[in-house]
Image (cartoon, rainbow, N blue to C red):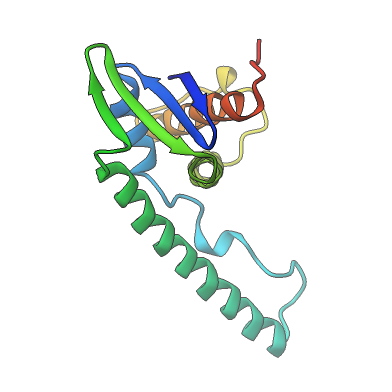
Length: 158
């Protein structure tokens, strides 16, 4: 995936023949972060704390549902994805990119949590049949995040 051009609020990316199915596969995993992973407080819950945690859980669930609807609409939008001879062109606004970064971050962090939050470099991580899909999703989500960040900052990580 690489930035082709940027005009005002529109960014046009080239997705190679393997990029688009990989991006779809990563995005189709959303949401990944377990809902119980974001406690309101680390301390013993009080009655008010339980009510507030419940409100937080409801708000997060509603946000996830909204993100899922928006994600499905994005992936089905033929104006966003246009087939070319060498792959696909994907057109996003800056708001789309910022939102997509959040969705990709959920996939990346959620996969890391499922893997047991490994502290070592993933290159030292020995995956098995069960953990391999999560390791790949985590790495690919990071790859797509990096390409999007490079597009909006104009800086390339070398």
